[in-house]
Length: 284
Image (cartoon, rainbow, N blue to C red):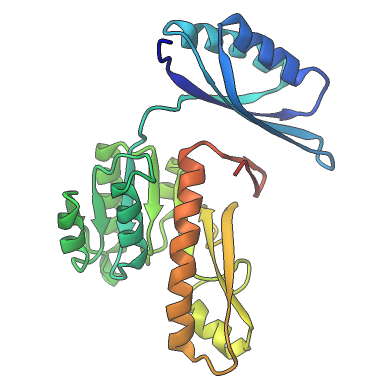
């Protein structure tokens, strides 16, 4: 059998009769072969969400795009059709802490994360040797307190040159300006070291210790202009003991941060995440 290109189709629209049958007919008419299908209806909101994976003949993509474009106005449908065999360009931003960046690079090297990494950008040079070990270009863009506007203008310029489809803040300990967030909607992922919405902002482990909580967590979310408030993609927690100090919380939390960011990024890369308002539907 001749191997055919695989595609992912994601759909978001008001719930109504006949959505699945009409999309399936459009794929069948282009000789598509469905291999994975997932859908969800938010009955309270009255919205329908779908993610399908299928193969198409070489000339099938353009024809299917035409069919979907003709259906979209009637169904009031947002849709995204992507080649599932391509590797999106992902720029990683980091600061000084290596645990999230090193974990992503290890998974990327092992083939767990299907992406290209054109560069790692950082406001410090600490992780330059880590980038060099993986043969990835490293760019140092300092962010001084009295020169933040200029620094972020440089960052924005470099990102425009690198043309990433996704940007990952792998413990990049800077707040991005609203203009930069708006330029990449639902394309910037952050890992926050707390179980949001608890302990927003700086030093969440210290906040958690002071509050005496029994669980700490981490959250992977899309970045918006509101601090730590974007749609949540993935979360996890771990238990702490009564005799754990702040450094114990930080040590345990680093493990959770790694798992959560890696899972959240994989879901995003595989087109498993759809947003609706400030919520996400994750077809994991």
